[in-house]
Image 1 (cartoon, rainbow, N blue to C red):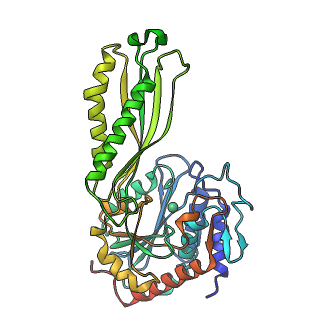
Image 2 (cartoon, rainbow, N blue to C red):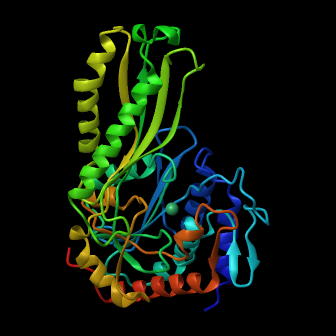
Image 3 (cartoon, rainbow, N blue to C red):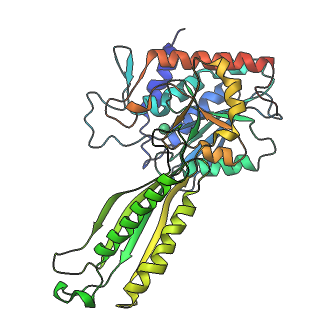
Length: 390
Ligand SMILES: [Zn+2]
């Protein structure tokens, strides 16, 4: 297989600096123009912040449920990372193509864009949709908007493949990813009079101790042996607070995450944390000062991917790609949002997650070849009939 045009496309995609904090519009416009070259009009969905957009396009008969190929256009930052080449210039080294997003997940998008001419000339019995989202690496708001659009569309895709790097293995389940910020408001006095104040640092510590107790309960509850850590996990990763050793801290805040097993709602777990704060901690704080309090705000909540909704899709895809069985991953993806919108979804794409987000991120040539072959096989399969019963 001649990869030169796929690599030229990947080179162009990597050159767009689409770090999540920046605009992705230039990339979206570039892909829309590639579609337009082949007579396909893309729907560009404005984002919920300036400079951001999703793209959705349909190749083939739009009046039938089809197969959606989905990728996020944004990448993680390169600041502070020790790259040996310019992260925004695709660079070859021993069969590896280095560049920010090469694995996560512009390699997949390049393969999809390069498959457009093949898909346009195919006599597809069911359409192929191309979807690009924004902010997957930050708050997942792009896919939240796109999933809402699809949920109310007259014809919904029958299936979706998200091309996150899985070495082209079909992944049927992933844990949810939810992030929260807990802010504690204490009351400042000189620490020699500590009973007349409330240390926000000490209260935050009590909340974190409660998170640990909750984790021990979760470890006794539901388990799913498909995941390396087989339980829902709760983890506090950042904390800051206080101004001096001899002042009871007025403010302390910490950020924690919940990686919920598919079918478990992070919101329910946060509800238990809020209930503990309201019942045990806040009344004690307010005995000292009515100004004290604890608030917990959601930064992001994306649901897990539950394999019960997509095994039929995975079985239909297995013969089309070089995979050995179903997999499950512990990193969050947009798949759960699509599944919740009624679109059965699996994750399958070139490259490996191990190198994603790292300096010198790369995708191997043979992974791109496998992905291109998979898309060709998918096109041929869709010429014979729909992938799954509608
Ligand atoms: Zn990704």
